[in-house]
Image (cartoon, rainbow, N blue to C red):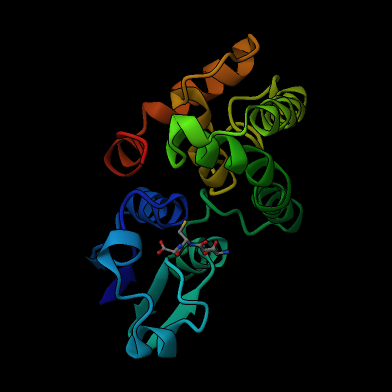
Length: 206
Ligand SMILES: N[C@@H](CCC(=O)N[C@@H](CS)C(=O)NCC(=O)O)C(=O)O
């Protein structure tokens, strides 16, 4: 039995939940992190020395790092459409997952934290504006790359769309001005139609 530790509103936990939904996996989820605690207990730190969610245990195998968990689950369950085995296709998927972690989310994270987790009177508006410009530039790169294809790596939805889609959910849900990017809107609309997105990602920002 697969066990997932992590609160449902965590961006990193949502990647894993969305992936499980796409594959159709049964699992047990234990709320952990922020208001739920658990992640700072000695027992949890034995599983994940970082004290972070998501962390999984799959028939005795413990794993952490959300992108790695997603790749592990897709590989284990031979989800070849989600995670193509062909070398070039696979590394195209990998590229966008890493790009999310190293480029897109670091630019968007300060906007999200600055608006959703920071009271209005404490907001640093200069920092927010700068971060917003960075996020617009990052989404612009994504648009220039994939405006001619329905999903980030081509004709089919893959796990490469998952981290990007979760970031896009926050970007679209934030009360900010956004440039007009019709192909990004169309891609995001496709993701929103997926039942696993609706069940695991859509919801109030917190
Ligand atoms: N690189 C890790 C980062 C995990 C991470 O930062 N998790 C956050 C939630 S998004 C966390 O556990 N924060 C502490 C908490 O929620 O209490 C991953 O992708 O899994």
